[in-house]
Length: 376
Image 1 (spheres, rainbow, N blue to C red):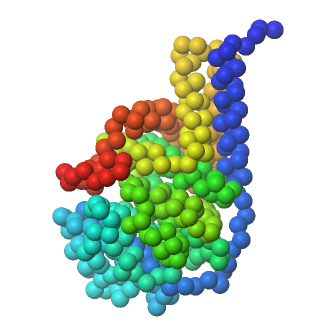
Image 2 (cartoon, one colour):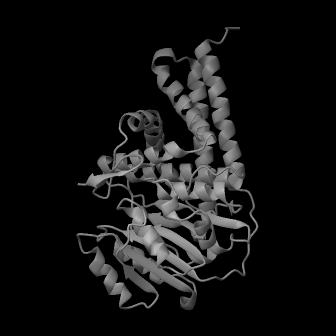
Image 3 (cartoon, rainbow, N blue to C red):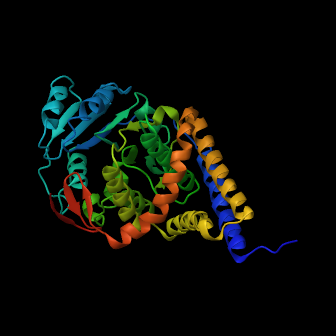
């Protein structure tokens, strides 16, 4: 019997832990959570919008159809100094719906302009016991509020949820599968008591939890403000974090339409992720190492390592299938091959990009990892 090489043994070792992680995350993803169906507090929905004239109408239309008592709901759209027709479109809805309000940030609650300051201004002027956030390029489902509120028992301070991207090509479909993969990991880890990440375009949190950590003005500046708030509440309060993954509680977002905008999105997420806890870096390391071994097969590959690569692809396919099945979105698997190529490349390249380039461009503003630089 032929002895396995160091490369083959190392690849097998790394892949074993990669697959084991996926099994653990799926366990957390499918974990049954306690619910409270009778909870109906006053709710504030905060949306920060900057130059979103192409998307803001669909977003507000969906928010106007929320299935929740209007006397217990307010929707605050923060026009973050848009230079297009965003503000004008928002005003159309505020004249039609009493519970929809428009504001322009009047305070520098944090030191730098941008989305975080816009959201902080919206929260300061809101009155909800539970605060929901989504993005101006998102469409929410009518049941979004009621579905998420079920997971707020007295010990829960923050409840993130899933957002999918609209997919109509291999380029947009691979982005959607990437989001589903990453958010399944986030949901699984959170529901096992190890919060790694979340996404702010589908997130709800208690005002009390927000105020206990001092709000955004007391959180170290981050270009991924949702990520920073999640970890601040988890570390500095007694509140728990749970991740809801019901189809009725999902939102839909517009995908990046070109490689330039996709690069900027990934760069921003990667830079913000530098503040992740140690366990988060360990998870990322196993993914990076697994993909590195796949790439190194060009030089050191054997039939054994090729088999390991097939196992890796099969494991990813099963992982995504079990997540998509819950959301009744199995048709998205037609983008799996494009996703795998994209997944391997960006997981390997992103750490280098983040390490050598800490400046992030987002919404015509430039930031470093810890501060605002300038407007472009």
